[in-house]
Length: 72
Image 1 (tube, one colour):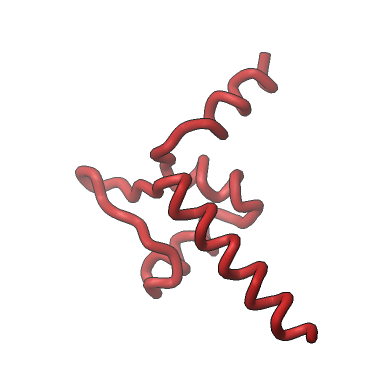
Image 2: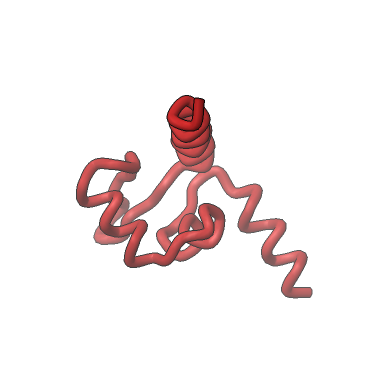
């Protein structure tokens, strides 16, 4: 059943910090640092940070292409 919950959270368009950090494979502390430094775009809903999956996907694509460019 836990696998089903994981698939559901992965398909969510808006994620909380815990979900987004799992999706990106980084710790919540690292994600908070990226948010406060403006590295990853996020928004607050009430007093909680929220992140859009499509924006995270674009951010990862940019990071991957930057890493590929550096290796050349």
